[in-house]
Image (cartoon, rainbow, N blue to C red):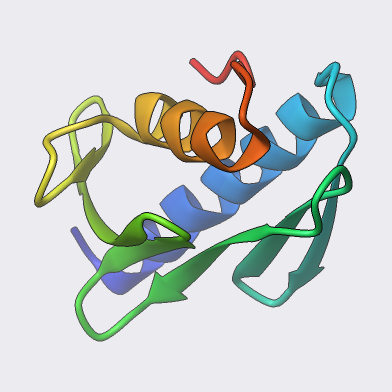
Length: 107
């Protein structure tokens, strides 16, 4: 994957997450600065942070349960340690931090 393809994949992913958060039933605020997306659960103030790591061509997710590195493999982002895809990983870490099931509905 070229740097241009990687940057485009990150951009599409972050936009998809923002769109899913806009439609989510939970009160999850988000703030984006370049390629860092910070999700804040309003009920308890905890955060999940997604960030682009260009040197490794990875997407990193930081949550209470740990740090996760994801590589883009067709058809999408896969966690290098848990083998979860990004939608599954995000739903899991958000649910753990919320203390109730959270489903973003990412495809």
